[in-house]
Image (cartoon, rainbow, N blue to C red; front, side, top):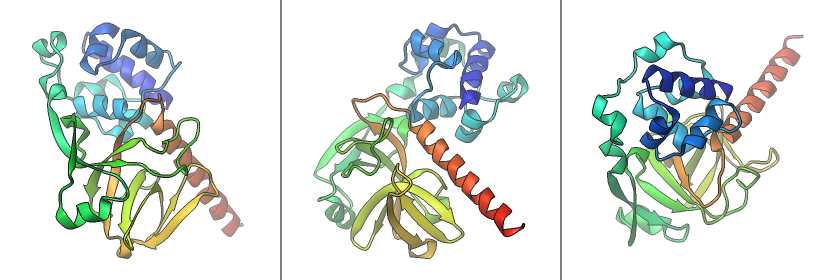
Length: 244
């Protein structure tokens, strides 16, 4: 995650913005930007996503790759009025259906919910789900009652190591997705917390987590990347063992 700290500083310098001006673009404080650039803190996943989307940078590159000035100079250029006035699109709100676990089946049948909530348009979510369960809890995890902002995707768009929600066998399951060929395993924060296993061909409806509405400060990107790193380490160990 150190790449993202350096990339934020390079982006800000390239655009000629001080920390306060950069912070205002994303509803943050100058202290937030300072702590990111100095490596004392990491931006939450929704913050990282907003910054990456704003500058048209791949989130994966923004988080994992230390981008050069030449790399960054090819991305979206700020207009002068956007430096002094926060971008208008970040203030645009859209309504999405809000459901809890007991209402999800009815929502899928009717295509609408009795409750709606307003969220910033840039989250690109089309469903707000009240999370149930403790399997994603931890120091920086997702607690029961948090609102998950989800975006409906195709099975081919499922990403290894990221949180997804699956509707299969009349049940909604939310967990970290691990892909083994055409097999999908959903797990919680703890390694032993296995939630479900299914074939990619069996996937019904699936959503990817875009952001979380919660009163707690958390670093979801850190959790997800740690899980991905652990999984890569296990894969490498298996490969070495099989080719001795």
